[in-house]
Length: 266
Image (cartoon, rainbow, N blue to C red; front, side, top):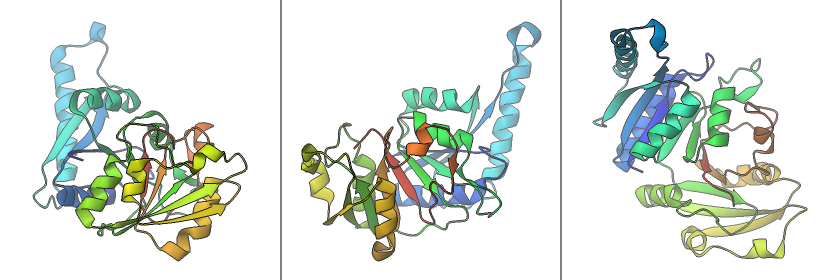
């Protein structure tokens, strides 16, 4: 993971600076660079001058740089990146040009009055982007990732290179991966087969029978005390509610530790 992207200003309730500091601390360990993104909307061509739109881009860049200046960069290359247009379109377009390896998002503020774990924009990015996503709880401080709990229903990994982020994290921190296979009501015999790459990075294995993948994670979370939860992005399963609406309610999912959502399905 050489290119990490951190969007700012996704929600008025999201605390961006703690998430940015986590991303920088994480990038230092992986020897990666960090793109810090904010979008600006170019004025219609019919009623504007190119110099005006250039100024808007420069103002956005200055705004990002002011925020980055408040962060301890720890020797990491941090690039202020103003992007034109809507974030949900601008990030995939930038990814095609620069191969972003990880998108770092933040959960909503830990306020009992706020019902959301992910806001609409963050939820939509998880839902629609092909980039692996790391979701950081608010005010979470970086620490080495030594224990990963990966929850799957099937042992077959369908997307090429989907496991690359996990492999790099395990290699960087010398960590262990516990694989939890959750057998739901629609579990198939073929789900018992395991991808060779997944087997090679698994330190220990356990299975359980639960109504949903998420319930399986909850059941085993406290006995494992992981530093990171890892799941696959699926249109039905762990984030079932996410595919119905973009925002994710805390009653459907909440986490006090980082959550890595890998591309593709399991």
